[in-house]
View 1: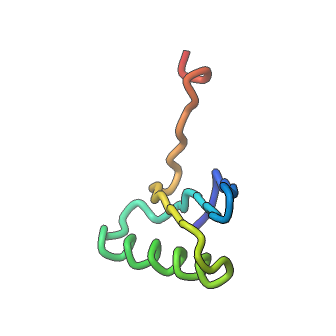
View 2: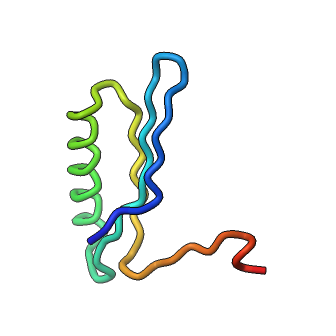
Length: 70
């Protein structure tokens, strides 16, 4: 449903890609993992050798920063 908090970086010869994907709240964990795995495979196809980390968020979830929480 969406993607946010995309972060990319390099350290020496290594590349890192991190992001949060937004999934339907009523999705089963199994289906959420399948989608996450597909997103990871797609990113790795574009950036071979990159370390990819995908975080799954339920639809409408908003993480507040420490500053926003105070």
